[in-house]
Amino acid sequence: MTSGRFDKLNGRIRPGTYINVDAKADPAVTYGSRGNVLIPLDNNWGPDATIIKITADSITEHDAELGNSVGNILLLNEAFKGASTVLVYNFNKGTKATKTITLQEASGDDPAVTLTATAKYNGTRGNDLKVKSVANADSTFTVTILLDTVTVEEFEGLTTIAGLAAAGSQYIDFTGSEGGALAAFASTSLTGGTSTAMQNTDVATMLDAAENENISAMAFPFSDASLKAAAVSKARYLRDSVGKTFQIVVADYATADYEGVINVTNAYKRSDGTSLTHVQATAYVAAITAAGTELISNTYKVVPDAEEVVDKKTNEQAEVALKAGEFFFTQDGDQVIVEQDINSLHTFTSTRTKSYSKNKVIRVYDAVSDTLRQTFPPNRFSNSPVGWDLMDGLCQTILKHYLEEDAIKDVNLANDLKVNRADSTGDSVYFDAWIHAVDAAEKLYFNVNTD
Image (cartoon, rainbow, N blue to C red; front, side):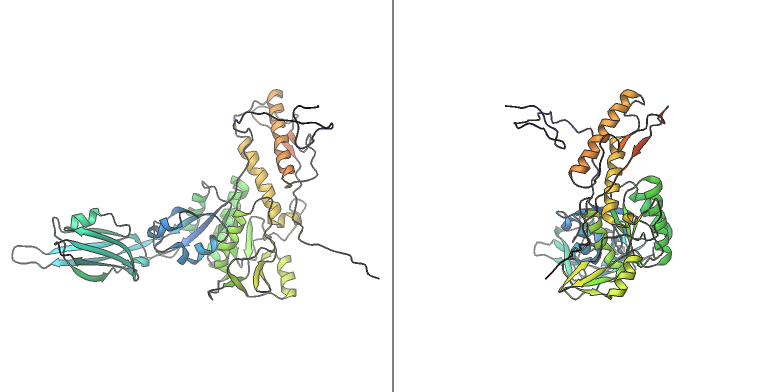
């Protein structure tokens, strides 16, 4: 019986049993991965200019940082319909809400005893915090912290201000008279918390931070034209000059005309009656973009928990919108679907053909780019015939991987990705590459002949 090793792509000619036995070593090729979506949140609470990483199995662990549950924050609720990991970039400049409570009036030589409650973070959300103290039968006190009308923390068995401060509230910092004893007091609201409007410099800071994160897409859920222009400009720089293979999702930004920008121009109403704005719909679009791989198109994807399109487009409007590079939703019976998974590119050239407007195609090119970047770091190979042979071998491995998963087609393994030996010299290695991405079958035409 014929045996030996086999090549998965080319197979063997003769009948037989072929077995590859290999050590489970780290692969020489590191393939790019996708999935993380960045959602900027002007939340009026939480740490400012900070990225909060939330996974699907840790959603309930971030209520104190967000000042609410994820399910109650519309943008995050929509993002988790499509992504399993959401990176929240929190904007929250302003001042902290505070309240000073007199526990005991001054008497004679004894000064007043006061307790000061200061919100953990800046922002108007701190004004929704309340604190109360209830006396217990054993001469201790139970201090309760409420956000709106919901109890978020409760500390029992306290006797002193120092003990309350040490209890470690995630919402309020407590200070007060040194050595002061606690007392009972009625529910008291914190006041004076303020929030400052986001500026262009804040957007730049966010995108600088995003440069160091592994993200595949970013929503920009803001309508201010100058902020959108700043975000798109910086995103273009990060994609073209820094090599960050991600897309930014904005709303109603007709001038983008770039494969790195997705322009959302309508929205949908949820089953609970909430109608999203175009700006809010960017969260869901960014999430499914981040989750989509080089093998997936989001064309005709059903939007969960959506029952009606907001700002429906007629057939004529839809055709015009597609030609203009607009990403929008369409009614399909009682469901809302993505019309077509495209980006804003609509001016085509010899180097940016119509295929570049398809997000699945862009994900193929981005996946290959990420794989090449991770597989060929500086100073790993010698710039010599021996090194070139090693690099050519890895190039063929990369091509085979994407060919076998049906992400690329029309592949010549020996020639479509290889070192240009004539131009490679000194510390510079040049590669020649030809990649033909596989698009999704989105338009199917049938010629039906009848008698």
